[in-house]
Structures are given as structure tokens and as C-alpha cells.
Length: 252
Image (cartoon, rainbow, N blue to C red):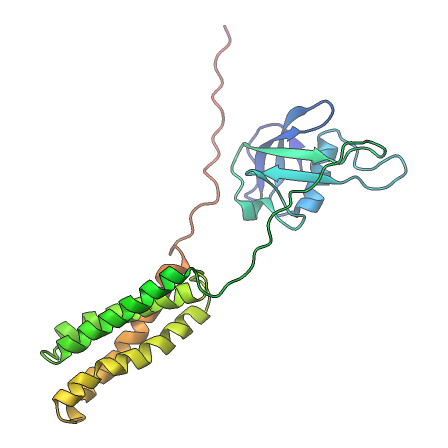
């Protein structure tokens, strides 16, 4: 439901906004609009509530565009996805009448091409960083195999592998392939860090059993921790601030 005025919304699915109509005679109006309706339907409802005809004289439906946050919204977008706040300014762009020489063109945004790595320098930097970390850990293991060395170094390697996998897949940390790729990087690198220790112990596998089993728990935990850290906030931020009634000054 859309209704005029600037009062509080009836439920959480509506928001009061100011709509600036870009027309021959431009004007602004305050409306309370639903946030869950696609823009293709919401624009017509707002146009009717703003006093604009939704149809031409021959019965064909008019086209309207919404402009918010500096861009024209897509027909399938919703205000709740955009995070529109209370009393935010929106622009309604009506279609010019037939025969009018003024044409409203949608913005020509550049085509977004997907790429695997998020920058060659970032990818190279993390590859070198993982290698240096593994080399330092392998050197430390030849001197000390206590938990003070294996736990923080193993956890750090898992976190670095997760960051490396994130950049390999373009920087989006919420993809499930990020931890899967990180696990594929971490496992061979972790095994190679124990090769110098195995040579130092003259092939004594029994001395490596406890540290290796320890890493089988620390590594996946570190990858999961790094993935959740890149995934997003633990608690979602509120979409809009609480509504406050405007203060009314006494007359006189």
C-alpha cells in the first residue's frame, strides 16, 4: 500500500521517502512506499499516487524509471535490497509522451567481465608470502617441535592459504570454492614444511605422527576461520535507522 504523508510506516516493509518527479513541471511529494515490490511495479504505483497517468490515451502502459544513489534502478531490484533509509530522496523519471523529441536513455554501464585472479600483484604477493611462511615454519620445526611452534605457525599458514585462495577467485570471500581451494593449497604446503624435519630425524615417522595429526585439526579450523572472516559480519547491520517523528515547533 502506498499513501501520502510523512507519518510512521505501518510495518517494517514500508519506508517514507521523498519522490522528486522529473517532468515538464517537476515537483516533489512525500510518500510511504513498500520496499518488497520490484521497481517495475513500484514505479507505476508511485506514479499513480503522485498524480501521473500510468497509461497513455491509447491504453498502452507508460514506462517509469527510479533513480537512487546516483543510478537508475533495474526493473527487478527492490528498495529493501538497496537499503533505502527513512526520508531518502528518490527520483522518478517518466517516459516522454509519444511524438516528443526528448528521449530518456538508460545509462550505458560498462560490461563487467569475470576474471579469476584479483590482480596479478596481489596473487604473486600472497604466493610469495605463503612460501616464505612455510619456509620459516620448516626451519623452526628443525629446532623445536613443541605446540608453541606447531600451533601458531600451522594456524597462520591456514589463514594465509585462505587469503591466497580468495584472491585467486577474484576477491569474493563468500564463495564455497574459496575454502576448498585453500584446503588444496594448504595440504601440500603443510606436508612440505615437515620434509626438513623428517630428514633431520633420519626418517623417523613416529616422531612426526603427533605434529601431523595436530595439523589435521588446526589447518581446517584455520581455513574455516579465515573463510568466515572474509565472508562478512557476524551480525548483519540494520538496514535503516529507527524512525523518529519530526519535532513540531509551537506556533507564534
